[in-house]
Image (cartoon, rainbow, N blue to C red; front, side, top):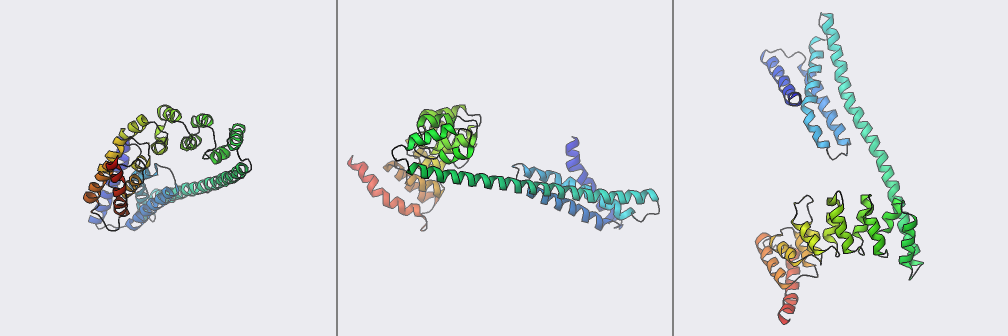
Length: 327
């Protein structure tokens, strides 16, 4: 209750005070009040913009209260700074100090966030450069070990299990043994586990284990939807579960291991050009799916002349449907 009174009640009270002063034609301090209200909000908005937090938008809830504080303090200074009453003059100047402190607090917080972001960016840039160097050195070493690529890379990973940069550079390579990918896919480090899940050599049982045991499986949904080795039952569960991660249809549509029932459903319901384009390039495409896509394109996309999917559909239909007829 106190929270809502502060968030909504105080701003309403401030507006009531301003309206009463206007009705009474007593504008003393109004200009300064509005000036400090605007300064408080603008500094708070600037500080919020420096943050990269996913919840920074919640700061908007506090902006009315921020304006109210700045407005009342500015109003006190504007009305009583020249008062003959000493206590009122002291209160007015204390109000000015508090208003300036409020704005300064916002600016200080924003500057701290800005400095923190610079440090994070520098750290990330250095880490990315380290990954790039490791990637180049791994590529060179693999060329120097023809026929022994898997043995060399497996050995390198085993000896550098705690080297995040090396692991992130090494795991996308298709020379890694499935058993080693299994251990890395079960890593508590999400980025390491994700790179192992994305590797084309990762086994179906490993992908099934990731889907069913990770504490935050959503992080791996895109990789699972796109992977050729993801078990069909996992793909079906993933497709029909509540949509906590959006945009997965394009990965289902392009995955040749996606069960036919899902591809068929996408062909009937998809409206996004990218999803339809991915489906048209899926090797598992058949005549029935093409027929549904033709209807979908006519209904939802009006056979736009600039839609490349229409041309691709026309190109594929004679071949795919003829092969179906001759079987």
